[in-house]
Length: 91
Ligand SMILES: [Zn+2]
Image (cartoon, rainbow, N blue to C red; front, side, top):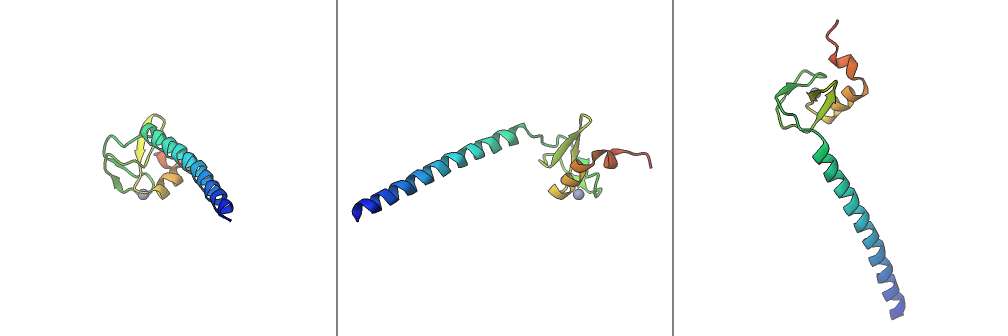
């Protein structure tokens, strides 16, 4: 009876260990990603909703070498799907 409990605990520990390792890896990956990902260097304007975006925002896309800041992830996603639509000034 005791053995089964120990085995159970061991299995739990192992699964937790594996999960913890996996978690650490993903966290590291995310950290690295966020280190690479840009931060808005200058105040800008959200091309989707025309709201002003203050510098330091992490919701940034780079399009044609220019930084584009967004008020929200929603706007960023919309832009990322079709950047040309929102950057062209020929109307
Ligand atoms: Zn917006």
